[in-house]
Amino acid sequence: MKDTVAGLHKVFETGVTLSLAWRREQLGRMKRMITSHRKDLEEAIYLDLGKPAAETALMEIKLILDEIKFLEPRIERWSGRHHVAMPLLMQPARSWTIAEPKGVVLVISPWNYPLMLSLEPMVDAIAAGNCVCLKPSELSPNTSALLQRLIGEYLDPRAFAVVQGAVPETTELLKQSFDHIFYTGNGRVGSIVMEAAAKQLTPITLELGGKSPVFVDASANLGVAAGRIAWGRFTNAGQTCVAPDYVLTTPELVEPLAQKISAFTRKFFGDNPAQSASYGRIVNTKQFDRLAKLLPANGKTFSGGETDREHLYIAPTILTDVRTDDPVMQEEIFGPILPILAVHNTREAVTFINKRPKPLALYVFTRSKETRMLFERHTCSGALGFNLPLGHLLSSRLPFGGIGASGMGSYHGKAGFLEFSHVKTVTSKPTFPDTLRLAYPPYSARVSLLAGDFHPTTRHLHFRNPTGR
Ligand code: NAD
Image (cartoon, rainbow, N blue to C red; front, top):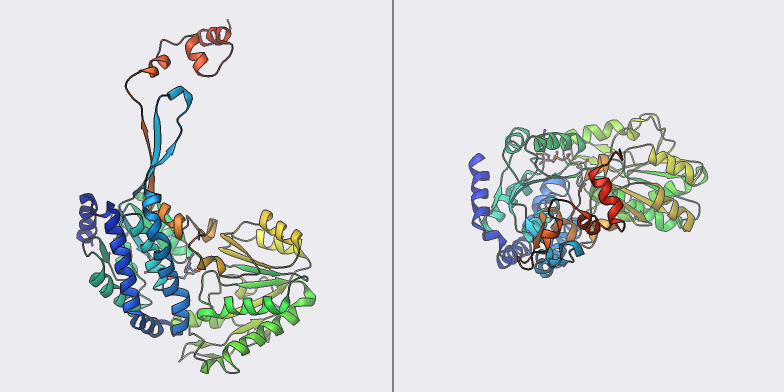
């Protein structure tokens, strides 16, 4: 591992990754790798997660290809010089910034979108001119093995490495020296990564999770809200970081909303979702058992609730009459369970959300301008979606990331390019005329004038005798 990382540093030092042609070439190769092995990738993800191929195509493959398409023509502009004016005091002089690659970056990815969450950060890192060491998740072994093979085959083998493994391997990897660490996963491991990075003062991005709330008010179009919430929650069997985690709504809407969401699950997946080709599975028995414990034993299930451990199946489940101290409200659900809780009004919903850790995403279904403004200005989350769950994830033009417990830093598009870049300030002053001499000591009224003091004489006296005595 030490040799692998040291090798990447050596390659970075040669400057090969600085070339824009090299970066474009790697992005082009990645595009070919994905399009030529589309079926293999969909199959590997299906084997790991039971994820329908259409979901892989829409929510993983398309996003990576879109990101390449968005970044490729912009690399030159973003990495080139951006001139800025120097203050009068320094004139004549010029200054500009350039975005330079950080160096060798480590990308640690999770299992739930094992392709997109490995390759989309890589696309941003490549566009910025870095070498990348990828550590995919051990919990999606088919995808991780395929990625290792394909990256070795398609991308410049000098500049990219894939290290497979679980906790011991990642722990060892984190002892190596990197110029940036990009971690996606849960917050507990996020703090382990941050602690390891702190030892070497390595900058990090943490893409974490948590509970992403939804608020539906009385003005909302309930039918549209129900369909979109159901889509956001039950895609990938609920194992999406920005999926709606729970719904808050006013007491009279709990039942009708639950009914409508439940009706949408039947439209999406039929009367028996276990037989639907559009419905995914839970990743493994550990996650299955964790989720099964969140299902109430006391009859609060509004719809769904069926489970089949052997086939890692949990039906799309809606819970009503949920209390805030129920297990399902104590942790990120990350599965196909949706609790709906009553709040008396919009203010109470805002207070409820603001009392809890800052979410990765917050969704509000309303037609009221005041409600929109209240949420926009008085809540804090990685992203805020009005009438639209998951939408921000799908655009390369929008930064994607969390805040506080849901993460730090962001990526996608320009945000991602900058996350993997160091924006360096460059200044340049001609040696003639040597105007800087005006600022040299010994200090006099001239310096006060330069500092913008229009009472040079008194200021000058102050300089010499600040106590006034
Ligand atoms: P995971 O178990 O696959 O872990 C993620 C990565 O961390 C893996 O590569 C794993 O090997 C590594 N890891 C695990 N334990 C480690 C340790 N002790 N030391 C060092 N590395 C370790 O995935 P997960 O954490 O179960 O993923 C689900 C979580 O990720 C959820 O909380 C979800 O919300 C969050 N998530 C966030 C985003 C986002 O973009 N913000 C995206 C997907 C998932």
